Length: 106
Image 1 (spheres, helix red, strand yellow):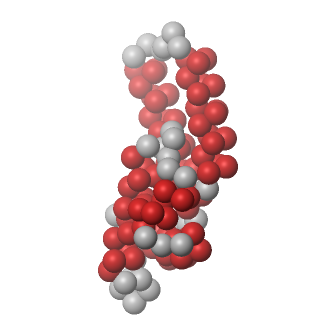
Image 2: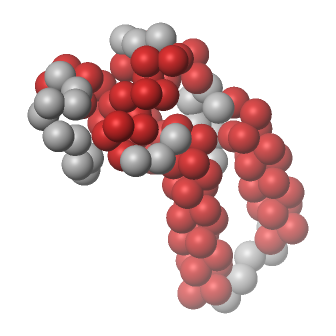
């Protein structure tokens, strides 16, 4: 998943950052907040941000936003394939609330 160079991060840091990325990707609609991500990694917010950026080349916030965009695109494609959804407007509002929450959480 990650492209970390061994001299940049220790193996436990690399593994911790990959677990954080998985936690974000697993639920891109309502991802864990920074406190939860720090608990997953066993790092302070500053160290997690630094390690994540070294490993993935982007900030946690950018990564989470990208994952959110991917999830949104997948849902749109599924709705088009399934012929639309009666709850379309409700889902759009849920997504907007989730997006606002996501940006505020990281």
